[in-house]
Length: 612
Image (cartoon, rainbow, N blue to C red; front, side, top):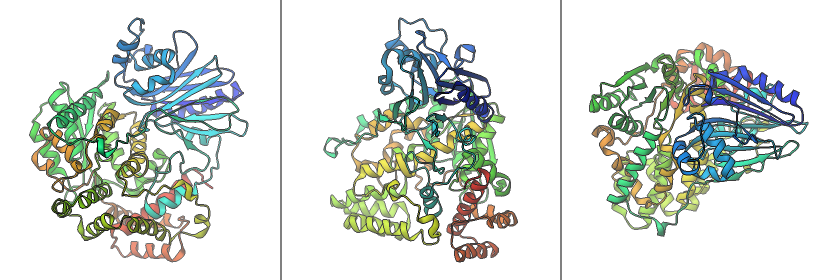
C-alpha cells in the first residue's frame, strides 16, 4: 500500500519537478521509503508503506529482470505466491514482494495477467521500448489513479489530487458533481468525473497504454460485473451454501497476507461480524478490534459489538473503542475535507477516520473491514425494493407481503415497492421527476452548466442494472474512496474481503429470489456464514453502520457553523435563510441537518482547494 505519481511527456526536468513536488504531499501514503525513476519522457515516483517484504528488496520503482520495464505499484495481490508457482516456477526471485511477482508476470503475459490477479491495485509500468506507460486499476477501484492532461501534451497521474493541483492552482468545479451532491447527497457516481472539472479518475477494472502527446486515454475493460441470464441461475441449495461459505472464508483469510500485525473494524452489523468470526476461528495471531459508537443514542450498536466479542471470548482480541459523541464539526470537518479532497455525505466519514487514527496509534498497518457486502449481496433498501417485483410478478403474494412487513421500512417504502411491481415505467418517471424537483433550491447559474449525459438513471425492472448501479455508481465508488483516503492519511492499509471478485462471480449465478427472505436482506450471506454471528446479529433487519449524531454535532458547534454559512453559494436566498432559521431554532430534523451539512461541505471544500 503506497502512494504513486507519474509524469509522461517530453521534459525530464518537468517530470522530476512534478515528482519532487509530489513527495511531501504523498508521504502519509508511504512513510517507509521513497524512490524516483527519471528518464527523458517519464518520471515515476513511489512512496512506500511496507506491508510485504519489509527489506530493501521491496523498493520501488522496481525494474524487471530483462531491464525493459519499470513499475510503481499501490495495493496488494493476495494470490501472488500462487501466481509465482503457476507461471514463474523457474524464476529466481530476489524477495517475496508482490511487486516483484507483478513485474515478472507482466514481462510474460502483459495485460493478460490482470484476469488472474486477486486483490486491489493501481499499477503504472514504463516500457522503454515503446516509450509508453501501462496503467491499470483493480476491478472495484479500491486503489486510485487521478489523471490530468497538461496543455503541452504531458500527462500527470497520481494517487491523490493534491500533487496535480500544484500544476492547476485555481481549479474549476464540476457543475454536475456539485449539483448531484447538493440536491441528493450523491457523489462518486459519475464514472471518471470528479468534483474538479479538469481532473478525472482512471476507470476501475480497466487498463490502457499512454504515451506523450496523446490527447486522451483509451481505457479498455478486463473485467465487468457478471451478468447471468435468469434461466441459467441456480437456487441457493446446500451445495451453493457451502461454495459461498468457502469463497468468503478464503477471501477473508487471503487478506491476512502481511508481514505486519492486522486489525479489523467492527460496527456490530452483519458484515463486520462475519469477518470478525472468521478471523477468530482461523487466524491464530492477535486481532485488534476497532469500534466507534454513540452511547445513549437510539442508534448505539454497542450491544451488538459486545455480543460478537462475547460469542468468541477470544483472548487474542484487543478491543479499542471511540465515543462518537466527541465528534466536532468545527475541529474535524475541514481536516477531513482536506483528506478526502471532495465534499462528502455525512460525519460517518469522519468517524471512519477516527478508527484509522486509532489503528495507527496502536501500531496497526493493516485493517480488514466488512465494507462491500451490501453492494454485492443486495443489502441496501433500494436494492431490496428491486428484488420484490420478481416475487410479485411470479404470484408469490404471501412472500412479497411478508418481506415488506418484516422489513419494517414504513408505508412509503411499501407503496414504492407496490408501484415498482405493478407500474415500473411510472415509478421510474416519478423517480426522475423527484430528482429534478430536489434541485429546486439551487441557483440557475449552477444548473445551467449541468451535463445530464454524465448521470445514469437505472430502471429497477432490470435487476442487473440495480446491481451495476450500486457497484459502479451510487454506493461503492465513494465507499472505496473514503476508505483509501482515510486509511492512507494515517499510513494504514484498508482491506475489503467481500470485494474479492470471485465472490461476485458466484453471487451472479444465484436466483434473485434467494437474496431476500423473511424480511432478511443479504439472506444468502447470512445463511452461508450463520456460524460466525451471534443470533441477535443474524436476525437484524436494521442498517446503521458507524452512526454519527449529525444534528447534535451541528448544534454543538452552531456558532462556527453559522459563521461559515455565509460562504455558502449555489442555493437560493430564501432556502439559505430557511436553513439558518432552522439552525437557530435548535430543532434540526435529519433532512434539514443534511442540507446544512452539504452546503457547508461544498463551501469549505471550495475555500480549502481554492476552487473557482
